[in-house]
Image (cartoon, rainbow, N blue to C red):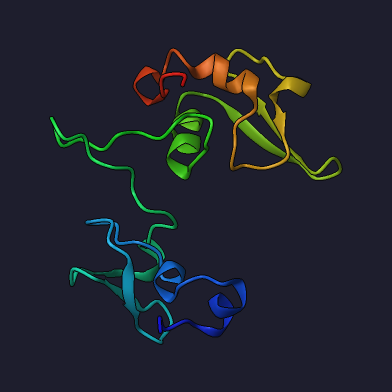
Length: 141
């Protein structure tokens, strides 16, 4: 039987998933210190700050060059959002509407630039940034 914490047991998740993934190698976390600002240890023995644990496994590595294969643009991550902000995009939370609004560096915005969650970019944003992030766009299947 897999050890599960009470919260993950209720949600049906393994304990390793609740500890996140190692930022060094991507292996699932297996041990967490029970103290404020504690450290985690992954299955490969790396020790890292709990706050640095990844919430999802890193993308796979390319078998030829060894670089990580970027995820699709449509699935927003902290890295993608940071990259947009560095390029001059603005992201605001419209609390009264319960939406997130994006404004491009040239000031373009509107309903097609709004989304209910930060986890996915609106289609208009994806189309606007597709040229900047060519490597990250998966080929249509």
